[in-house]
Image 1 (cartoon, rainbow, N blue to C red):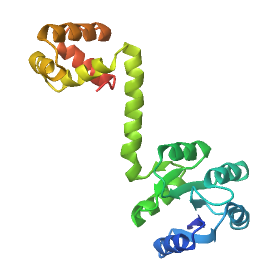
Image 2 (image 1 turned 180 degrees about the vertical axis):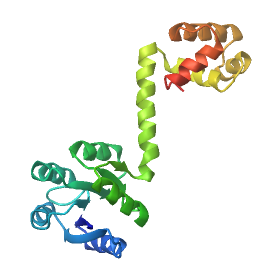
Image 3 (image 1 turned 120 degrees about the horizontal axis):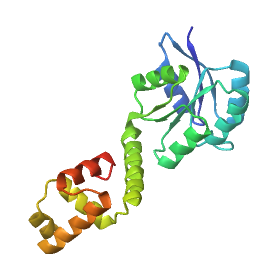
Image 4 (image 1 turned 60 degrees about the vertical axis):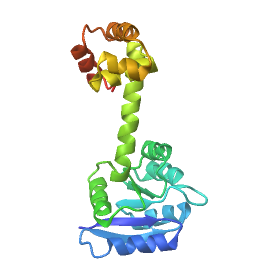
Length: 212
């Protein structure tokens, strides 16, 4: 049995391109198209697709509102956002609304087909192009939380990066425009905040807690 897909995009050329991209696949079948949120609701009611490929920006009812509406009556429907917007806020709002995947419109055929099959099985997936950005966000958030937890300043974090990179006290002093005595004092302050006694312990705690 093939996976029934509905294409929802206000641009005819995009829908035709997607239809052509998915053609000739034994387990994926495009059962219909819609150019607006209202039309999509009608098509879902009539065609009962398994997966929707949905643009996030459309006139009238946008993609996010459509997801929220459809999820009320079609909770089993799997929705893939397919958009040109790589904005992290759109991405987070889409998953919060109930989307199962988020892809950019430059996605390749194989990746898109794999995404359709993945969400059909009930798993969520993110475009490879966006993965690095999201992971960076998670790292930055974890670092911010760890920074607050240990009471570190921005200067402390910069100092930690230099320590982890293997810089000597002399090299740190040169880069930070400090004296070696100031460098030793500031290192001692950081050790105290991390509850460690030497460089090895300092590096271990910094790495384990995502501070570098």
